[in-house]
Image (cartoon, rainbow, N blue to C red; front, side, top):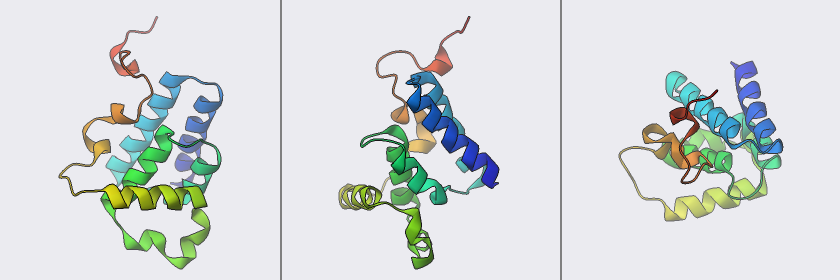
Length: 129
């Protein structure tokens, strides 16, 4: 559902603006869970993510991984051309050149690869007051 994709991408961008790593990590997990549950991908939100984040951002890496591991040529139809920014296309080109086939996409195995907590415990494993 479009409203949910809009809310989830907006939530991630909001977490980035307020610099709340746990919030961003939770938003990433919610995006991944929605994709895994529905087998639907928010490719139409690519421009929004790229225009509101910086290079190397977790959401950017997730979007690139979706494109590399799903490898759906229809996502690059002429009709979808306005979904993508120049930075996205460059990142995608680099990722495709480096990619190798693996059995499990990173977002299916361990969502912490997209988190920013580093060596700190994940928000999922900490107790909140």
